[in-house]
Image 1 (cartoon, rainbow, N blue to C red):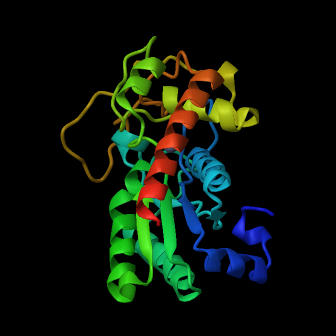
Image 2: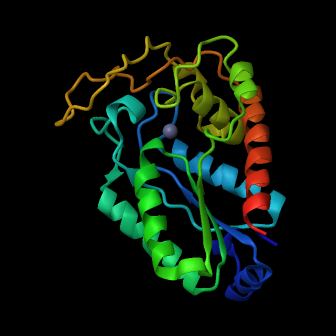
Length: 251
Ligand SMILES: [Zn+2]
């Protein structure tokens, strides 16, 4: 049987709920990712991790949210690139809340929200907090991403040629490019990869967002050394960790 909720009949979905299957809600973004990656990177990765995890734990993948909270200059390049289409915090909270509320009313008891866009986190937490305040222990909801569960030794394995720039700057750089090469190689334009000098860290935010706050390419750190093999190392280690988390939290 399919793991995609949207491809199930209501009866198939209902029987999965009754087994206590974990329902995974992937959340991405529509955001620039430099000259070599498409706008839907965060959604492709959220969906890709969700489907691989669901296969391992007998879970169900709900239709993804394809837009995310406003791109920030020093984690996603900011709003000044055509194609970056952002939601307000209020919209993302309401949208996530509504989907979670419907799932819980349907009887889903175990939910994992897998958000793969850096800027979403606070608003996803708010939605989950509000929905669990309303429904108490009718459901347990976890929030995770793919970067926090990566063990330290995997980071040094992946960054053996270029230095690790920190997660906020890992935008359209080695990890996202490598993951896309492993999960959706047809969407990667390797020949258009630029060896950008990288953005300069700034310890504060400026509004309105000034032009030139980040490199014109939209790449915040070099993607050099990216490969499908490095992507697969990340995928394997993240799936092990996410499976452990699900087994521990959803009994
Ligand atoms: Zn991204």
